Image (cartoon, rainbow, N blue to C red; front, side, top):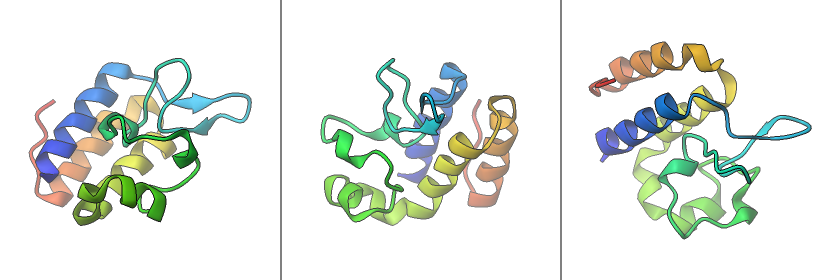
Length: 108
């Protein structure tokens, strides 16, 4: 399942090429009103609730809605940090590094 999550997030981020942020503070969000989604937001289906915004992927509210995330929290946290904390231009390299460290294939 980790490879599936990783592939989904990589494909999403590398196609979107933009942070999912709310202005004016520029805070990253799972889903922005303009349709952009962060690394974890793209994995969330209709169980997503705006109340989840501002909470890390390992938060109880998110894990309750998405129990399939529990076994993959280290990977998901790292993906979230790449989206939230890195420049868009560095995403490909950071994702490649994460794949190597996690024993996953980088197919992009």
